[in-house]
Image: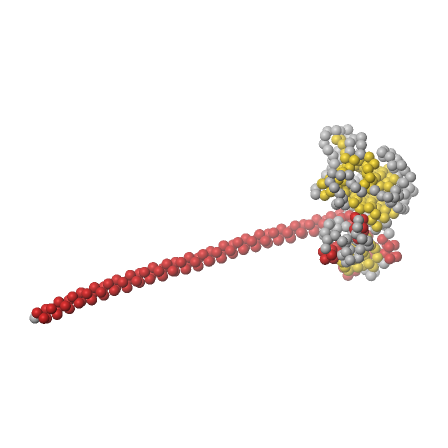
Amino acid sequence: MKHTFKLLVSLLIFNFFFSSHTVEAQILRKLKRKIENKIEDRIERKADKEIDDVLNKKKKDSKEVRKKEENTNGDTKKKDSDAKNEINSEEKSLEVWRNYKFIPGEKVIFYDDLKSEEVGEFPSRWGLIKGGAEIATFNGEKVILGISTRSTPSRIMPLFKNVDYLSDEFTIEYDIYIDEFTKEKFNNWGHYDVYLNSKNLKITNTSRHNDIDFNLRYGEITGFASSRDFSIETFKFESNLWYHVAMSYYKGKFKLYINEKRIANLPNFSIRPDIFIIEMSSYSSLGDKLRMAIKNIRIAHGGGQMYKRIMADGKYVTNGILFDSGKATIKPQSMGVINKIASLMDENPEWKFQIIGHTDNEGSSEKNLLLSQERSKSVQNTLITLGVKAERLSTLGKGETEPLNTNSSPEEKSNNRRVEFIKL
């Protein structure tokens, strides 16, 4: 009995310890599962956060890409729009000059783009007759600025070794800036004159004895030939603008153009001019400083014989088709030559031309070759807009590979920048 009691007590103690161990084990297992669940939750939350971060980054990157694309597309559209506006502006400008008939001479004897001049100094390629002039910068370009008072106008002329440099066939072109020409004659005074004199006529400080003299005063332009009036059409000048002036003399025939309009035609003038003089005067008693300036002065021999040259030589070579610097954009004053070519092709429907572009040696030979190709193409496209069929025209660019000279002066460079029309 006693032994049984001890055995029973032993069993109870064993069950107690066994039960306690089991409970503890259960608690440990629960704790383990709880810890494992928390770890899994943390891992899942971390994974979810990482996934969210990745997705958010992708969304952000996508937005930035879209924004960048929108900006790029906007810039592209703006550039396309600007290019289109530039083309439209160029086309409108060329359209205005559609009836322009001025043909520049083929051989340039004087060309002054003022690039090598020093600002504040007298222009080195000009002679001073009266008053003063200096090189100035105007809107980023170098110009010749007249310095004058009411009693002392600025009168200058190109420097040449020979006095009679114009010959019996010549053209003169330049750009002039018109600032403020007022009609208040008693308070403000400003004008510019151009004189074409023969070598036998003494160059004086007065403007009363000139073979050909045309002038602009108070917004009105008038002209004289050997002290006699000649007809000048009305031309409306506006202030603060550049104007292109072009004149031609061909064996007694004198013509004058302002921009695209011919305003004077002197059909029979017996005296041959030899000297070119330009006068710029500005004065204001009210203290306002008036400004007149010139740039891009070009004198050439020849002009007006395109048909004869084509028939005799089988080609026509011109440096009168001008382009923006480093570009294939045709300047409006080039339309005289292009209009004449279009007219001759209309009169001679069997004619075909190869248009060949040439450049001077400024810049790399590779760029000049490409530029000459683009310029010949621009001339072709302009002729097509004037009604010439595309199949009658072909183009070629030769860059600087066939110079006519050594490119050692502004005149030589100007003669090398030419376009050839080769009759096929």
